Amino acid sequence: MRGTKIWLSQELRDDLERFARSRTLPARLVQRAQIVLLAAAHKSDQEIATAVGVVRQTVGLWRGRLVERGITGIEKEAPRAGRPRSITPARIDEIVRLTTQSTPVAATHWSTRTLAPWLR
Image 1 (cartoon, rainbow, N blue to C red):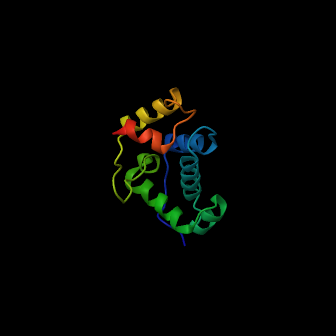
Image 2: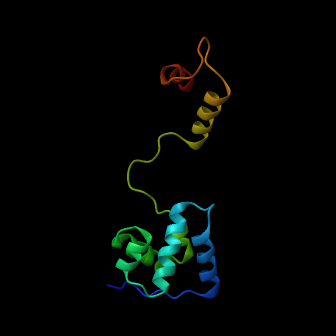
Image 3: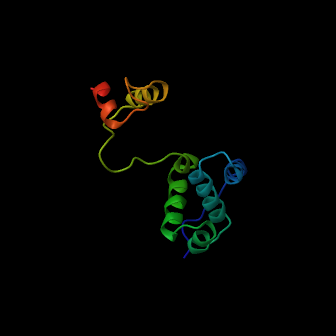
């Protein structure tokens, strides 16, 4: 089965080819670029899934996101279901700084129990 046809401008194709070859971009973005490039080459979802190492539904998902949202559809993550984070990024930075740059009194390293009083 073939999904939605993908037509890429030369500029978009160049960007995706650069993404697909990258060794520094996140692996998920590299994989998405490979999926879209193979889709633009008129491969079936199953052929793409086999070549990239994903399931057919994943190919359809990224093919559809590119059609709906363009390049930003594959670059950005969609919001995930579930409870929102209860710890702010600033608080996480504070915990990392505290545990990597200091030690608790009369101890050699932080544990969850020695860290807990500092976080209240």
